[in-house]
Amino acid sequence: MSAFLMENLSTIIIGLVLAVIVALIVTKMVKDRKKGKSSCGCGCENCPSSSMCHK
Image 1 (tube, helix red, strand yellow):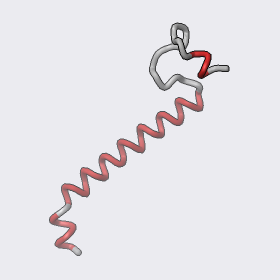
Image 2 (cartoon, rainbow, N blue to C red; image 1 turned 45 degrees about the vertical axis):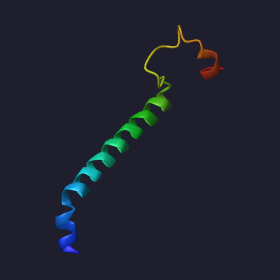
Image 3 (cartoon, rainbow, N blue to C red; image 1 turned 120 degrees about the horizontal axis):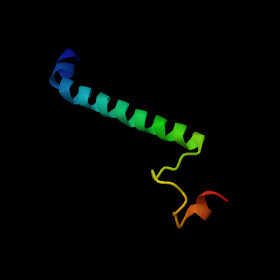
């Protein structure tokens, strides 16, 4: 078991870092969605699809 961990340590660390980054992004998106912020990053004033988002 120890040999497996030592041989794959860099892969495990990179995988964990990527998992943390993805979790942070998802958390930010959920918080923004609850606050009513747009996911596209622009305002709804000139958006042709604004009627679909805000009924």
